[in-house]
Image (tube, rainbow, N blue to C red; front, side, top):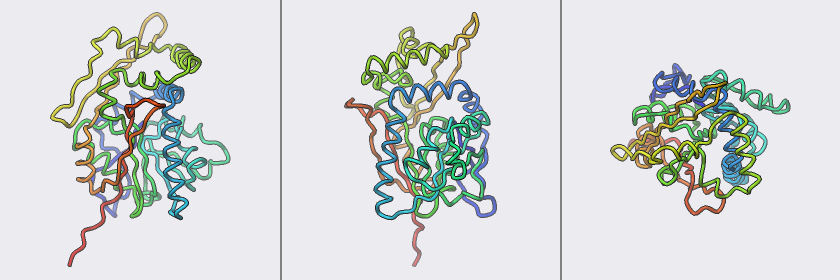
Length: 307
């Protein structure tokens, strides 16, 4: 679920977003099959995908009504490609490119593209000169977790966004809300969403988990302290968790490591990458009073005028 990324410097000679080689390879392995498909099904059943799609549809419907360009959208860390078709068909972008360093994810993403949209959607390991600096939208969902330091977040993540956007383009970064991470230790099992599920939806979710051989993360956390680590220097919080996967007579433990960045850290690193903070919108699952996720909006910082 990764985008291949470059340093923060934006150059005219090499307008290709290329891998930086730090945490990317580790996360590429973590999120290859079958883990990414597992998360996709879980998020679909818990309503996350519908939440994100509905938010993007509503936001860009207003921009379209104002006559703003919806020519090119890039999905950074496109994973299984669930968002690509929605950006083209439901949100209304003329062209969409999904970017992911994982070859397995790119194969799955391309399979998700319907034949009638194949001419408008591309899936690539890097964002090259054909699209760099031309994007009206860069969307990145659950991608900030792959960057373990402020430097990586600034140069690898926000630097790549800066490289991709056109002068009027906008980036939408969706991540777990800091309060949601603190209040929900088993957040990947999504206990907030689970409270909103009907009995049939809950049964469907559990059947999906069981059929894949995964042990529910909620059950996993019952046998641990259930405590989450706190933010380090009010900047990062590392979350390590295990998905035990039944394999024959044994159990393979898939180790996943995410880094959650405090709000102030996210905004500071975006600013350091010459991006301007526009707004943030809390996203709620169902009628739960605590926001589960947050959508941060950024655009290129206007050049400083000189007398």
